Structure formats: C-alpha cells, structure tokens
Length: 478
Picture 1: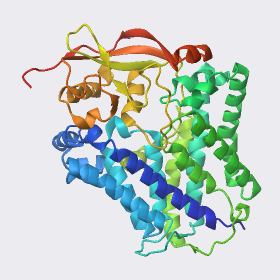
Picture 2 (picture 1 turned 60 degrees about the horizontal axis):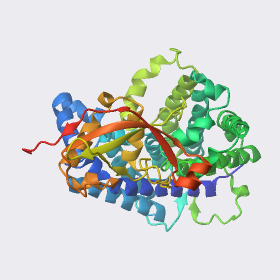
Picture 3 (picture 1 turned 180 degrees about the vertical axis):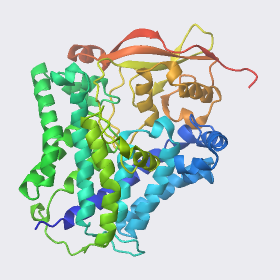
C-alpha cells in the first residue's frame, strides 16, 4: 500500500507559495486595475450590480468587497492574502489560513472582470477549495509541518490534474484547427503566445520537423499520460516526471503566471513516499479529517469534474444536461471548472499600440512593461508574476475595439494623469502629463531573424495593419 506523506507536505506548501505569489503580483497592480481611479474600478462595478441584482448579487458575485471596496481595502486584502499564505506555509492553522486565502482571492475574481478571468485563477480557487480539507479546522502552530491528506481528498487532486492535462490535449484535437491535427501548430506558438520570453525566440528558429515532433510528444503527454496517474507505484511516478518535464518546457519558453508552479505542485502529489530521496516524515501528522467528511466532499465535487471531462470530449452531447442547475450553482464559487489552453492556435500576432499626440500629426508611443511595442525590446521573463494589463492587451488585439470598451477607460485614466495607471506602463513619452489626443493603432508583429537581431538589435519586426480605435481628445474643461 503506497503512502503519500511527503507529497501531502509538498502539495500544501506549493499551494501556499502560489497564493503568496498571486497576491503579491496583484498587489503591485491592484489600484491601477481596480482602484477608485483604476481601469475597471471594483467600486463602480459593485454600485451597478447593486442596482441591477438586488440581494441576488451576493450569490452571483460572492465577494467581501460588497462591504467595502475603497483603495485602502483593496491593498489591505492583498496584504492579508500574503500574510495568510505565509502563515499557511509556516504551519500556523493551515486550514483557516487557506480558507482566508480562498475567500480573499474569490473576492477579487468575482469582481475582477477581464483581468482576473484566466484559467489559472480558476485553477487556484478550485485546488484552494479542495485544500480546505487537507487538514482539520483547528488553531495550531506546527512549524513547517502539515497533515497527511486523506486518500479521497488526494484523489480529488489527482482528478483535477487529470482534468487539467487531458482537457488541454483533447480541446486541441476536437476543434477544427488543422495545424494541431497536422502537428504544425508550434511553428506559430512561440511568437504568437501572449508574452514570449527570449528562449521562445530561439525555439521559434528550430526546424519544422522538430516542431512537429515536439507537438506529437505534447499530445502524447497531455492525452495519454493522464490516465497513468491513477496507477500507484512506478506508473504514477513516471507520469509525474513526464508531466513535470512538460511544465518545465512551458516555463522555459513562455510566461504563464503561476500556472506552472501550481501544476508542478499537483504533479508532485503523485509521488509515493518510497520515491523521495529523503524518508524522514516525522514532521507530518496523520490524516486530520474523518472519512465521512472526505466522502461528502468527494460526492459534492466529483460529478462536476466528470461533467467537464465528458463535455470536453463530447462537446455537443446533451446527455449530462440534467446537471446544468448544479453546475450553475457551483459556477460563482469556481469549485469546478473547464480547462483547455490554446484550443485554436493563433497564427498571426496583431498588437495594439497606444499613441499620444499634442498636435494630431506627430504621434508618440507608450511602451508597456512586457508586451512587445518597441522592436528592440527584448522579450522578458516575468512568470510567476502576471502583468495583467499586458496580457489583456493581447486578447484585445484579437478582437475589435467595440468588444473591449475597457480600453476607453485606460485612455480616460491617462488623460486624467492617474499615477496608479501610469505605473502599469514602462515608459510614458509625455512624462506623466496628458497629451491632447490619444488613439490605438494595430500592427502585426513577428519575431526577427538571426541576421536582423545581429545587425539591428531588433527582436521583432512589424507591419502597420490598421487603425484600431477612434482618436480620443482630452476634455479641456475637465
């Protein structure tokens, strides 16, 4: 009978570390994104929802910000999340600290709109809820210790990992994208992904044959290997190593926030005690919750996971539609979620460039911290932190201006010389002062060649594509 004492410790500590990174990353951006003068003010959103939804707002948008949502509160919630995650890592009342982290992060995600709608945000909340049953609800101080996770609860972690990996592979095959089916999608991936890094620039130069081989290996890992994780012993250990190998490759070639950190933690949860180099488990306590509680949690969460796995494979099937009321009930709390990144491969890279002018003729570019604007700007390494404005600009470029009206709020805040929003940018050509005019234009970007980088220092090349937005003029009376 395999035991998973060390894995219990690793999963718990990785989750605590991920919570800390998530809150720390958000704390540096929260006022520019969500403050009273932010791009998508939470306070403004809640005032609208209050009028439209009445009391049902608490169920559809569960958040502590209903009680207060000022700038000080937003910063304080981030600080409290960092504190709670630190205490959970150190072994102070782990379950209570995880509950605090989950409630605080859910409060942000419920009101976060486009900036907090990523799959890893849902993944953190989904695993975070399961983690409420890793240990008993007790106030205690156990330095760096934890409890052994109940086998049924650990099984839910494995099912979540299976759903995440299997869905990521299947959605690529079930969508009508020929480049996934003919294994050529990776020739686009490295330069069209939201935030490439310097290694992605190098990987893009690999031969097409190697790209196709890599794509085939990826499908084998994402579609076949997840089934092995449920076979204890050597098979699940091998599955963990293979899945971690894939995550490391993703880390080396892209910036995907804390997604890989969290996923690697779940993969390590597959490793039985006999496969760890160290064998001392004296600091890990026995299972801390009853089987009755574990069964209840399993019954509550397992159907939702099976629903999303089934819908991933049989998207148009209505066989499980009788479960929709239950899924709608769970949805606001992010307790079980669908996954599947890059279902359709992006084959071009439109980029929105923000420009300002004082005469309407000479336009200067604002530069973002991590998304490409300036051609000589080397791709950055920023994960596990996530620059959420830079990320969302990538999505906006794939759509029209009318589908991304939050961009108008960005312009308004820059016209207002809002320091919190200006801090989200790398350079302001007007040095913090408002220009008279602003506009968005669209370019198509692509990685430069070896010769271009050597001769010009440019990591990118671009062509003008079109005007993206109308020209905005500053209200002189404001």
